[in-house]
Amino acid sequence: MKHLVILSTVAILLFLSFHTVAYPANSHPQTIFGVRPTVEQFKAEILRADLVIRARVTEILFHRGGNHADEDVRIQVLKVYKGKLTSTCLCIRIEIYWHWAWDETGTPNLPRVGDEVILPIEVIPVRAGSSPPDGQDLYYIVPFYYSVEKDGQVSSIFDFPPEMGTHTATVEQFEILISKALKKSRPSRRRYELGTVLFTDDFDDGSLAGWTFLEGTKIRQPHKTGAFIWRDAVGYLWVGPETIQDPELEFHVARDSKTGLFHGERHSTPIEFGIVNGRLRLRSHHYLHHITALTGDPEWTNYQIDVDMWKFRESPHPNGPTDYRKFGAYGRVFIPNFPFTQGEHSFIAVEIGNYANYDVSERTWGDSAFQIRCKYPEPVYLERDPSRILRYTQILDYIGFPVPEATKMHLTARFTGHYVEGWIDGKKILDGEIPDDHPGVETGRIALWTFETFAEFDNLKITQLVEVD
Image (cartoon, rainbow, N blue to C red; front, side):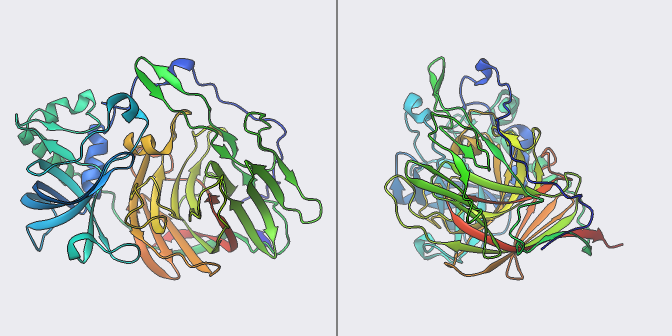
């Protein structure tokens, strides 16, 4: 049954048409190069990193080029800006976020032996996935790296925006910027305790009353700006009860009058959502389909999400992905054109899921990871890989995590001020800080979601968190 204290009951919305947002035809930038990070984004990345060092590559243990290139390299540490090291010789994993941009520019090289680099490093404990390289006890992951050139300048494979120019002119100026980032004050962290229960749903009544599904699509045609071709987000869908009826997408959602489940199919891969045996089922097998069920008050601020989750294995299909694991909860959800989107919505996800966020080659954890993902409002043309390059998607914390099949996992996501925590089965695992400029830095709805995954949810409870003096 559903119990709602502060939120007034909202009937499920069944829309017969798709509300569009106007995006001018020339809104595509000329390129993704020389756009990010801004000075503030760079400072945030330095603060978020566990280690920041200057190093020289001494040996390449593994290298793979092409799309989603990565390599394991031994390095000699030359200087430590942040963190403590037990050894001056480490093995790190460096990756390149892929984009069709490499068709126009040629695939860039990862660092080679003798190259000098500045590395913000995420230090990740071993929990699931492949073993860390070189017999180490920890993973040292480098999602973005910066090269110290022979003339003393600092460069990036994606170039820097103009505002970073003075800071990258010499390695000394770059080091000053790192020092300033490390001196940046952080929001105070206060203590909170559980307060009023804002919303519960055990789904036993079989009803979706109180829930709204995010609905929308992204444009589907390549767009050329000069010599640069944007490979637009082909056919991305947020699927709801009355998803846009678009012949090009060959997609339609219909409700089964006997079971009450909503069904859809595209290229013989299924979509299914609704209440089954007292659980909310969100099932998506096609790699372009999101299912996002929303509830709550956009003015909710400090709260805790508790929900039971199950993940079920799908049979392999030639027109769909193998068997991804991407599901969980969103907090601080902001949707300007509620409940419709072309990518301009934003949220903070506490979720199972990894691909194209960190571990882009899927060689470390594959798709078994637990992470806090911060999504900003995205332009309509943007895919997920360049979203990371342009920092519209940021990962606040993550770890490799085993995901059991058809076994209950209890997820807890706590949102307090600028901070968010991720818990599994009563154990705190993740801790992140929401950037100041994110739309959900203070308030927002909640959601449950899947992407390329067959998952079910039950016993949802949203509880207000009250500051303790």
